[in-house]
Structures are given as structure tokens and as C-alpha cells.
Amino acid sequence: MSFEQLLALVVDPDLLQRYGPRFIDGLLVTAKLVAISFTLGTVLGLLLALARISNKTVLNRMAAGYIYFFRGSPLLAQLFLLYYGLGSFKSFWQDVGLWWFFREAWYCALLAFTLNTAAYQAEIFRGSLLAIAPGQFEAARALNLKRSTTFFKVVMPQSLLVAIGPLGNELILMIKASAIASLVTIYDLMGVTKLAFSRSFDFQIYLWAAVLYLLIVEIVRRTLKYLEGRLGRHLN
Amino acid sequence: MLDQLSLLSFASGGWGPALLAGALVTVSLALACLPIGLPLGLLVAIAARSRKRLPRAWATTFSTVFRGLPELLTLLIIYYGCQIAAQKLLAAMGYEGEVLINTFLAAMIAFSLVFAAFSSEIWLAAFKTLPKGQLEACSALGLSKRTGFFKVVLPQLTRIALPGLSNNWLSLLKDTSLVSTISLVDLMRQTNLAVSVTKEPMFFYGVACLGYLLFSALSGRVFAFIERRYSRHLQGARA
Image (cartoon, rainbow over all chains, first blue to last red; front, top):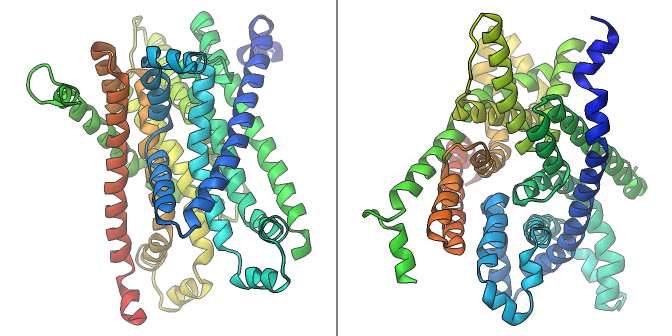
């Protein structure tokens, strides 16, 4: 068997020409999905974490319940609950004028992913906020810093350093979990893969997808490692 | 609300038995991954600590690949891959026909590999906390390598690894919901069927979520018990 024949087993040029561009599109959809939901999830997660460490009982309990629900059940079930479940109240959403949102699988997937990652990120932020020594708060008060200044200039930079490792893991988990979006008719990387496989029945398509996912995850992992080193450079 | 609850009844026309059967499949699938996944993970961790280069490379590749791939993709690759491989193998032996791999088996293999990859990291971290003196003491006492590993090292490793493993178990339990896509009739699949018949998506998916929550809560209890058991020699000292 020559090298070219061997190559054709793994990368068939015809197949690549036919589905290559679609794979690029799928990659972009995956990237968009993860970037948007992760960013929104960070905001929501930070709020949840603050609610979780506040001493208002109601707020605290509600945040705890939210986190428990979204961490305890599978993302797939949550996605179906939002997309099919909430989508079944068509007349209600039409009355409130939100039907355009719950009609689209794209928005539902974004919402489900955001809500899910927010719960995980909330726990990460809570841990990193609790890791800050009480003396830091006392020192900030002694210096008569405003509460916002204390939070953004003293607490945030320190807790971010603790949080960035787990946050990176969560980002990678999100990239992997985003494959689930393909189950509600979204053509992300996984969706494109399934489409291409159902048309060509060529197994190598799945291997391409595997390599692409591994590549993304590895790039993200290295970048995060570098960032972590940068953020913590005063410690070495 | 009450007529919705009657959908869950165990009488005829209710979805109770179906959902319960699905839940049983979910739990048994997750449990079936442990006997392969746990030892394999430990083996990978030991290979990663080996002095020889080849086992180390294998271990790194294994854990990078199966931790990096989406679980859904792993599942599909194993499912279709096994099917195609079996077909080719049988065709070479002269059997021409449709080969269908058991979905439970395919899912079990896929999730065992994923579980092994994630737990190998936990075992590795646990190895790092084990003081070197323990191994030295083993050889000073003339214990064989086997005895030293199973009676001295492993119990201590397990105690340290348990919290991490319990996290892995929880994500395994949730990941099993993906098998509904290769039409294994687990809790999620059963819920999908119920929804397509009754047109009550909100209710049934809510019930499914609660089902998974219940399993998570139960496993939390079980793990708390096991953790207490494994660290019971420390409790006296703390009191």
C-alpha cells in the first residue's frame, strides 16, 4: 500500500472537498456557542456566588437551590426541558412577545448552556472568594477604601488567580458539552459531523471531528496554562 | 397538576413502570462502567508514573484523548466503530450480513474509557500525596511488591482519591443520559418516548431532571458513608 492510499483512508480528498467548508462553519458555530454562553455564565455565576456567600438567608437558599439543580441533572435533560418544555407554551410566549426566543433552538441552547455553566462557575467563584484571607477585607476597611474599590482592586485580582485554573477546566468542559447542541438541530462541529456521516457513511468523518476537538481543547489548555503563569508571576 | 401526576401512575396508561425501567437501565449502565473504569484508571495512573518511556507515552495519550473528546463523540465513535470493525471482521470470515452491536455494551465501553481517563488523574494526584516513607517501610519489612501495593498503598490512595472519584461518578451518571441518542432505552430515552406520546414535555423532562437529582443525592449519601469508613482510623485522633 502506497502512502497516498494510506492517506486516502484517513483523509479522502473528495470527502474533504465536499465537507471541509461545512466543518469550518461548524467550528465557528461551536466557538460562538461556547464564547457567548461562557461569558454570560461568568456574569451570572459571579452574581450567584455573591448571593451564595451573602448572609441574606432567602437569597442564599435560592442560589443554593439553583446551583444544586443545575449541577445535579444532565445538561441534555436541561436543554430538552428548555427547548421542548418551555417551547410548548407557545400561546403564552406569543402573548409576552418572547416566542421568537423560545422558537429557535439556537437561543434555547444558548440559554441552557449559560444557566448550566453559571451554576458550575458560581461554585468556582465562591471557593475563590472564600479563599481570600479576612485580613485583606480588614486592611481595605482600615484604608477606608470604597466597597466597589475593595471588590475590584483587592478581592477580584486575588480570587481570579485562584479561580483561573478551575475556570479553564470549566471552559474545556463547556467546549465538550457544546456537542450536545447538535441534538436540537444546531449544526455545530458535532452536528456537521453527524450530517456528513449520515450522507457518506464514511467513518473517517468521526475521526476528523475527534482530531478537531482534541486540537481545540489542547490549544485552550495551553493558552490557559500560559495565562495562569502570567497572572501568578509575582508569586514565583 | 393532578391529572399530570396520574401520567406517572403504575396503572395501565401510566408511564410509571416505563420510567422506572429506564431509570434502572441508567443506574445499571453507570454501575457497569465501574468494574472496568476504576482498575483501568488505576492502571493508567501507574503507567504514567512508570520509569519506562513507552507506558508513560501510552498513558498520556489515553488520558488526553478521552478527556479531550466530547462524551457524545466518544460514544458514537465506539458505537459505529465497533459496528464497522465487527462487520469487517465477520466479512473476512465469510459472514455477509447486518451486524448490530449491543448498545448497552457499546455505551459501557465508551463510558468506562472516559471514566478511566478522568479517574487516572485523580489516582495520579493521590499518588503524589503518598509519603515516600510508606514504600520504604514496605521494603524494610520485606513485604512483597503485591502485598505492599494492595495492603499498604491502595487503601491510603483510595481514601485520598474518594472525593475526586465521587465527582467523576456524578458526571458519569449524568453523561449516561447521552445513550438515549443511540437508542438505548434509559431514563432519558423513556422520557422522550413519553413526551412524544403525551405531549407534556415540561412535566416529563422536569420529572427526568428530578430523577437524576435523586440519584445524585443518593450517591452523595453513599459516598459520604464510604468516606467515613475509609477514614475511620483518623476519627479517634481528631476527637
